[in-house]
Length: 155
Image 1 (tube, rainbow, N blue to C red):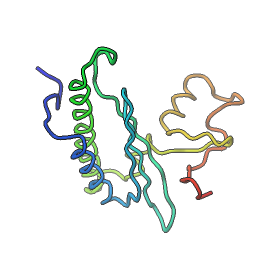
Image 2 (cartoon, rainbow, N blue to C red):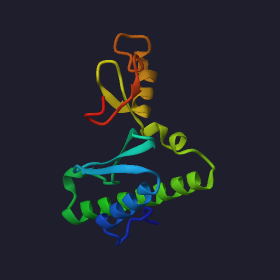
Image 3 (spheres, rainbow, N blue to C red):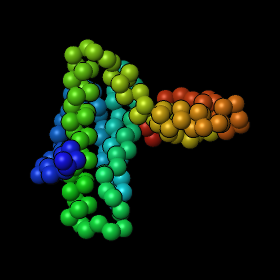
Image 4 (spheres, helix red, strand yellow):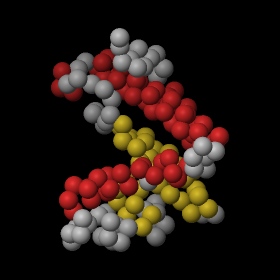
């Protein structure tokens, strides 16, 4: 049995357009897709109150065995596959939010961007796992002085 969405014929551009359409229904005002050979990033900014914005970042990694030995068609297939999975994953999350099962901020909390006292920005989940890795209470504790990261020019 093959991996889920392995043989999808839906283009990467179509999946990204559908992702953008889904997110815009939830007060998302800006969306950016960034692609690298071994991973992609989906970033978006959501308006939560009058002119109050919260940024989010999701890193996605296509399922590829060995990046150095894949053909262009295998890499294209992996990219189509991962963005199709992201589309359906987001669709299910957003339907649960729309239904009232969870709140947007609750479900997307791990991907929310925070800024610490030194101006470093990262996602909640990364900061949390860094803290668990042993930096609790140290001078570079990523939880010191955290606040919601505002988009550039919004300080």
